[in-house]
Length: 161
Image (tube, rainbow, N blue to C red; front, top):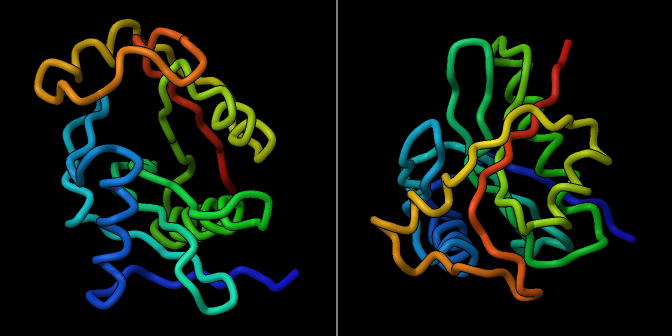
């Protein structure tokens, strides 16, 4: 297995990052209880696997924390997601943040497991948040592929030294 390489998002990689956001979130505008983010304007990192774009993470800095706004990979089981989390953790340490926060919807059971396996803990439940986000962004599905109603947002947090 070849190692995953991460690099900061640049003008040259922005189109691939935006295409990934459109694929996963239906556009580059992402809703979170902390705000509405235009991911095409956010800093972050990309992952390369064998020199080919394999995923991206975007974030915002807030006092004392780094908030992961989006994270997605094009391949599973090759360490891309973990490498992107590590890039965010490195940025958090460099910027003086003492914790990272990431959110996912209540139906994203794979993400909930992934984050917890990587040291994140459940931090907050925002009941009805997805329902509220659906008003300005009606393309947000009402159910996931397994039939779970998508209603709530869950924050996970990782404290770093």
